[in-house]
Length: 129
Image 1 (tube, rainbow, N blue to C red):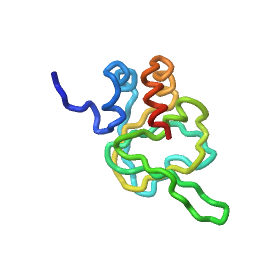
Image 2: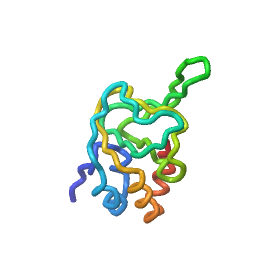
Image 3: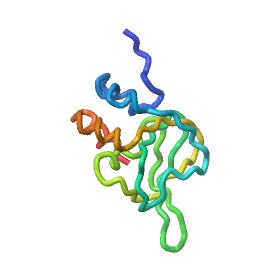
């Protein structure tokens, strides 16, 4: 039996084979350039991002113009999990802090897969950002 991980992303590697197969045909590779904005606050998120390398920063912009970094998403997690399970409107801005590469999946496809698998829904809830 091959014990090599199926993806450099920890979230994808942690999925059961059946759950991974629900996602695999819909995954696409994307370059993450430093400073790239994935979504602005109050915009609808269209894709989930699963970094292989690099870091996504979630930022809240305060009324006086300051920016506060509230979370980092790296190769062990997923950005967009909660959007796939509910409202796709972003509560904060997501931008690439450290450049890299990610798998991406359309939220509609991720939502369909989550509707087909309770274990995938649970995994998304645990990693939700």
